Length: 227
Image 1 (cartoon, rainbow, N blue to C red):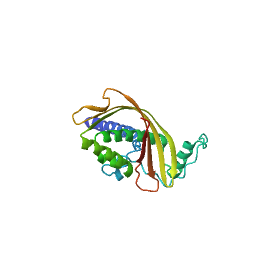
Image 2: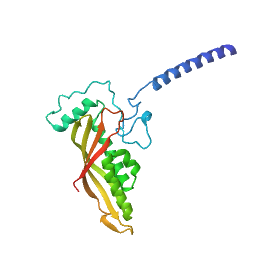
Image 3: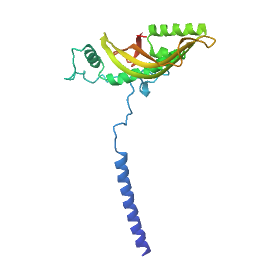
Image 4: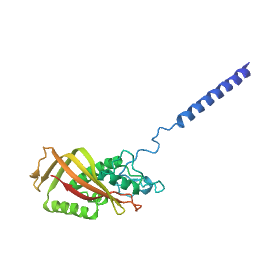
């Protein structure tokens, strides 16, 4: 009798093990659509990561066919037409994803400028724009001035211009933001701005990328402000 009970125990354990294996295969084999993570337009993929480069989009798949304009796109609108030109040169370009990445770059550049972080700025700006930022930082340092700038929030970010300049994609974004800004002299006295006042600021920033290049960086090539 003892051996018979042991035999039945073995059968029962084998059935339980088989059931558990089937359950595990069903669970582990499921996909939720996010296995590859979420794309970040201003970050590069791990295999192309260089220290200090954060303004990177994923490289387009050159084997993809050129994008065609959807039926509901008004090609008489210069912005829509320009976005489709960029999509034709770079099928991976996504205007919504780009705008989200531009907002991240906007905050990063403002923070780096106020904290005199030249290294970060150099990775995000064209040489001409970097020179302007660097000259302003150098002048502050020379005078002992300190810029206190806080981005309270971005109220809106809208693409207002898009075009292909040769092989370069060029996109201009209008940012409307709320900021607190004050400039202090070497003694800590406020010489410009107000550290207790939130101000509406409108900026126009233009970004560019060479669609022929293996470098996936978007670079800030121009800035304008209504303030």
